Length: 360
Image (cartoon, rainbow, N blue to C red; front, side):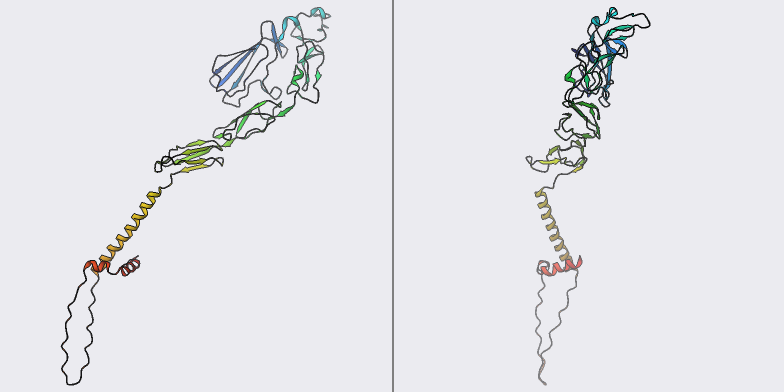
């Protein structure tokens, strides 16, 4: 078997095709991939009663990664097998009358158009027609008249099996939401077949999970991605999406360079608003400034209050009693000492605080 690709198919999501006999050429055009299978010289394959030496299939890379010839009867996209034409075509000597109304091919051969051809492997002759072996049977010889049942309750995944090795334990491709699988969900394939899972836009597999898994193993699921919807100007993060179970790390410009912060997508579809935590030094400085502002306010209020309030007049002491007939004593005038502004501002802190409290 030869394979030749005229385009780079490394990013193509369509399943890889193989052929046992012949040549396979593939080409990428836009989002569509086309492949042509050609038999070697002197070989052919039969399709709908017609002998062919080549055939083409296509796959739309932007759709569900399925080739045009894939189906529930052909889930792996196998090509018809090329058979030797020269050995099978000249069988007229084994027929009663090729040109007459009762013309019939020899046992194990069938008509393809007007030519008698021995039935290739994977087919058997039934009433002069080559017919594919039914599911769960196979034919491993050219010119067979019957197919052989698979042993030990094994099954084939499609008709036309040409070897006992096609009889196998099968499994069904699991269903999937928010994505698609190749081969397609519901197809029956051999137990060891690798199933490829693709997720829709804004969905992903769990972080580090491979999108290829054996059919008999647990198939991965698609989860909505987490999103960073906003960030402040101090973080090293940017807005965008990241996979379910993925973890991100980031730094903050207002923190030490070696301090790392973590962000984990533990809930599918969660949306994050990221901001850096306030610096402890900034918080302490802000608290100190706040206290100083309060003290300054108290002092200003106290000074204003002292300057604007009237100074109460002291009541003169009562005159001492005197005996009748004695002259009244001469009052002694005490010198008045006025408090300074500093004494009046700071001399009664308790009173100042009470005044501020009342003003508030």
